[in-house]
Image 1: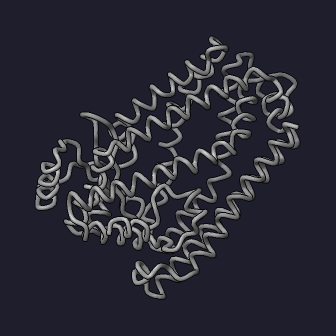
Image 2: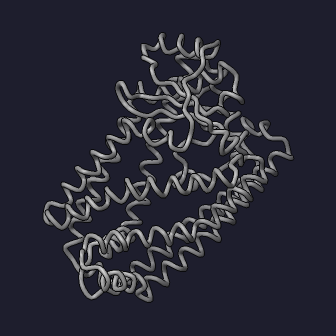
Image 3: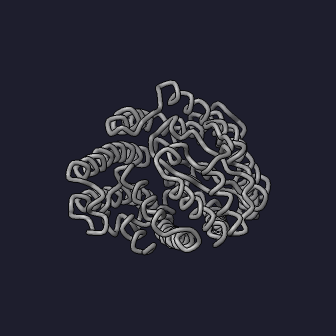
Length: 405
């Protein structure tokens, strides 16, 4: 019964994603709302449609391939075979779990690599977005792998050790460990990890910094960490983000954002990011995420008591890594529902931050900044509502413009 459920969930998740992509692609070909229809001429509208279509097709092929392999692996007991191969050579159960998960991660990365290359140097380059060189691409892979192995491997090893040492209370101790780590990364991740991949430089003195400083002073916001990131190293797309709390709070502006937007538009974008801080959106989403993680750890702790989860993947006895794998596959429907909730809350927060920026700074530059950022990335101006519900953390442009007024 569990075996069939695993296969149905894996296949069903892919079908749902493919259906949503199809609906969204069809919707993109329709006529956008008059409020945004003028932002693309006919040529740019067709480019936006083609860009979305090519990304969807690549995603469909990638998803079909990975889903097919997953179904075969579940149906033919390949996961149990991999576990047996490792267990025959290693006596330590913690190391067996680490090697098993590491092997799956490597295989998953290997499968995704050709699609990542096609996306970066094929689609993104074709539409003028990619700026990454093969050297940058390879360097990112190497750095990301090293960071992932060191940080992810250490955290995973600690979680497995906690399970073996405190089986009954593992769910609580495991959550405390992960929550503590997430707090640390939330506070200091931008300063510790991001510089490994991108160059962060303080915004230079000048008219823009003066305007930003004046706005921050008007809002009682102590601006100590304002950086410009070399986003143009990889893409022409513009962005900005906020991270941290207290003295560690940081705002990062992509250099592409500064290049493409006017002074007032940049201040409006920064006002939006400060709005997230002032309205406590970042803290609220962080707390909600950790509450959800606690619930998931509690469910995982329950599931690990039953060897049936491992046996569903072809094993003869319960194993941490096999039961955890089966558990997270079975958890997919709940994760989809949580995704709907989280996306809805995130979109609400974006509306609120937009309103904050328009009220505390200026309405017109907020509108024009949103429009430029969207059209510059060939965004779909007419996304399907269901696709938005399942995938958008930010509201569609037309809804944001109506909200700003």
